[in-house]
Structures are given as C-alpha cells and as structure tokens.
Image (cartoon, rainbow, N blue to C red; front, top):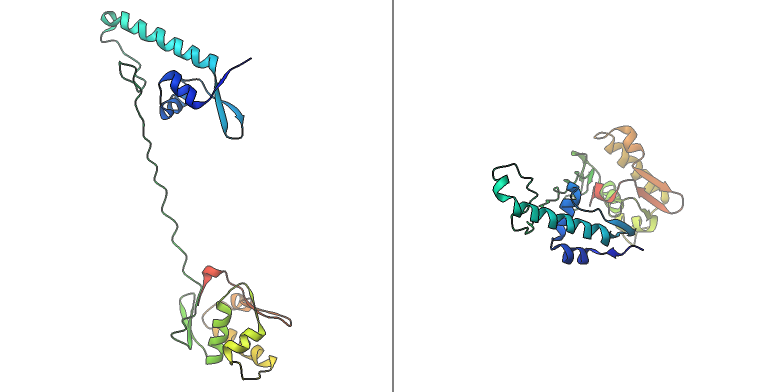
Length: 207
C-alpha cells in the first residue's frame, strides 16, 4: 500500500514553498507527483521521505567537511547554507488584446445620404440610405419587410413589394462603384416572403 501526500502535506514535511517544490521538480531534484485523476495530484510519501533523508545526509556531510572543501565548487540549488527556501516569483504579463479591425460598413444616421464601405464614401438617395440603415441595425439577421416599410416609408404609407426590390437593386449599383462587384452581389439576401438579410457580422457594420 502506498500513502499519498497532497501538496499541503508535502509543504509541511519539507518546509518548502509551492513555487520551490515545482521549481525543483522542473530541475529534476524533487520527486514528481502522480496523477490522481482530473487535475488532482499527490506525492508518494516514501519518495518524499527518501528525498528528506538524502537532504539530511547531504547537509551533515557538508557540515563535517567544511574545512576540507573550502573553495571547492558547490552545486548551489537556489538555497542558502541554512537550508531555507528561496521564493522564486515569475512575472507573466498577458499580451495586449488585438486591435479591432475597422468596420466594413459605416452608416452614420447623423449624415443621411452618404455611407462608407471599406473606407470609401458612397452617396445614396434617402430611401436607399434608410433601407441600408435598417438592415445594418442587426446584420446577419433577417429584417422583416414590415419593419423595413416602417423604417423607410413610415406607418401610414402603403408600399408595394416591388418598391423595396427596386431600391435594393439601385442601392447595390451605388455600392458597386466603391467595392468589388462579386462582394456587393452577395451583400444583401432576400428571404422569400419574410425580409432581407445584410450579410455582414456584427463587428463589420456600424449603424
């Protein structure tokens, strides 16, 4: 049968701090722990006792031979001659967060009539601007046609479906002047009988 010691028991038995124990394990001068499952580890008591016995014998041997070994090379293992552990502090600074990429589409409601697409300005009609603004509020999600009607034409105006389709087509024509045609072609997707989707991620559209 083997007796397992957890870290607090090992610290009490050896007088070493947690950081010193793991430093010596990395140096190969202290018994390695055994896995107990999950993230739990422990040390065999017999191995810890053997390590202690070797330290006691080495310490007494050094004390009895101080005169004979004076000036001889000594293997200094981050401890002083009183066998007191030295605290090793490792400072780790996380890397700075990555800078956010600039938005692909910027729709500034304070300046209706113009938008920015990949840093280039495009001029739009009022209907085209507010149609794009409605879609840019929640990019990547289907905006119902009823919502588009209210945001572009208001509550009291009856609008045929062809009007939305027409303004969408004209809007994409304007964007082709400042962006690649292939990219613009897939920018807005109609969902039959439901609404329109602006195919951008949330961080790519500012409205």
